[in-house]
Amino acid sequence: MIRAHLPRVSGTFLGSLAPLPERLCPNVEDCLGSGTLLLERAGIETARLDVECLLAHVLASTRWQVILEPRRRLRQVEFGRYLALLLRRERREPLAYVLGTREFWSLPLAVSSGVLIPRPETETLVEASLAILRRAPPQPLRRSPAPTPTPWVPGGPAPSPQPPVILDLCTGTGAVAVALARELPAARIIATDISRRAIRVARANAERHGVADRVTFLRGDLWRALDGHAPADGVDLIVSNPPYIPSGTLATLMPEVQWEPRRALDGGRDGLQFHREIIAAAPQHLRPGGCLLLEIGADQAAAVRGLLATTTAFEVPRVFQDLAGRDRVVVARRHPS
Image (cartoon, rainbow, N blue to C red; front, top):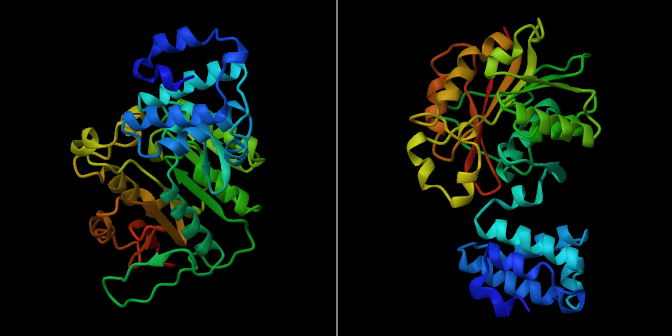
């Protein structure tokens, strides 16, 4: 059914097929085949996977159920919804925006246009944070060699009878804050973002996963969000996935990235504008022995190490790699005294 009309799929195509009688609506197999072809023509490498996800969403099912029920016929309302979502994806709108959700740390998170979509590599921030607070090596991660053989204790802050306090700058959807709150039931987390929409989405995600009572969301630009709210004795961890894409390269990124908010991506001329601001003020907010964890681009480790070297507040930093083997998180521990 859809295959016959693929050459003229467009907004008018959607309008012409929406009123189809249910007996003429296509089945799952037809939708998978024609939808995949449509997205492939749009240059989408994950076309088949995306169509499976769209159908699972529309049918309130799972991808595996969709695959196992090829003869299931869509109802008229389901077909109309599917076409609407398919056409959005054809325009290269990110799948997470089309579906309104994205999985992070095995947690389904609400995602909204105007808020940065969580990336799998950002889970490295969570892995490293847990390794530090639990005083155990992060098994899934591989640590890059240090520039010098200076020892470094991955345990970070010394054991304390007080629950850990974590500051998450540039929280976006709240992905890191919510994941840490789920993993650390005693932790108190402060999460900030400059975007009102991001704070709304992040708060909703915290409520959805039952951690809203332990995560405080503050709106503001980096440190200014903490005015009147910063713990007097500092925090144990500062984690951040700040914008780190150089301004000049933004236009060269995939079409899907162009849908995301520029201010959540643009790290200035060299991509390190926000890293500088965070590093400059972090020692004032960290307890002695506390750790700063910054997500970075794969080629920014040396530059961020250099920024950390401009202050005497930190021990020699280490760089953790993501599961693809790329440098992803710089960890710097504040001197214990």
